[in-house]
Length: 453
Image 1: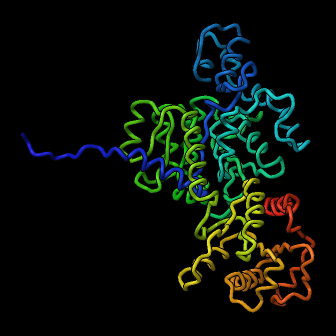
Image 2: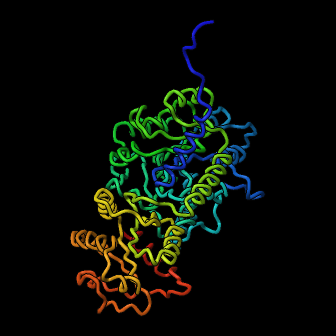
Image 3: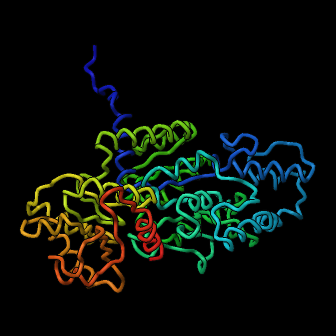
């Protein structure tokens, strides 16, 4: 018998890939790239999802008296049965169909318009409600991902960006940290009445791909290189899926990789060659992500961070004696989709740890010291939170905006407390009761402030 040259595939490989995905999600390092396949719900069965592009194709064919079934706009538009003179009218037709509901959403600042063509599917909403998904890319021209994000984060809390194959209209993020704000990015344009400003047929797609390769949003592409891509609902042709992957990763061997759901067989082999994770069923994927994240949180006693994390929205600084009530504040903030640094452990104050703490405060967007009677009682003791205050106050002096948002226990004598005089400059009207504290209004204030930055 010949000597074994190639060892068998490791049985734990799939588990390793799931662990990597869940770890990246909890760190806020995953960017979903969402195609049209499960965007809309079936009005007759809200728990069933449909492809809005396919519905539009079917209804367009029916309106022209065409009974054949087509799977793309190109198949329909360039069929002999479709009037050639009306091919270029498709952009205006689609734009007109969505025009009123988009205006309603913008004018009334509502999440989902009342009389819209499609409702976001329950599967889409479940996906986007999974913690840490802030920046989302859609490859569909329909506004469904935008509606879903606004339903989750509020109509005013979501930024909408667009690549429209127009050098003067293409949008890019300003900085690497800019993707922390809830955002929907239309990679292939958003439906409107302007022709060639969003992808409908094959020639549009080729034009967008050529344009992206020559003038892609450079900062966004640099950000995506280091992110884990979760590509779902994109049952495009093999070459197009490869383009989407390559255009975001630039180099095929760049890590971290990502997951692609439901690739066809030839694309499946390609994804395996570049060590990407592949799965078949989007619902099964979302089910498992929810299950594994719940298990992870439970195993950590519902605490997401045991060590400092960079690029958070909020850094909570507090006395360990206030851990229970601060945990409630943490939950109020994370329920709004904010990424919060929350140290639940009595960690060592070693030099290396403090270096990381300082870096974490420098990279957060808002610093919240929780000022309680316990802090006043601990005035003669050495505590890490006092060092955190010092770091935060130094950083605050470099901003032209508020960086420190204190919240005080009711009855805390802010002006006469034994805290640094510079910290007293950040006087607050935000108080909480020790018994049954309610942080909902404060959390809303913090959320609105961060969304307005």
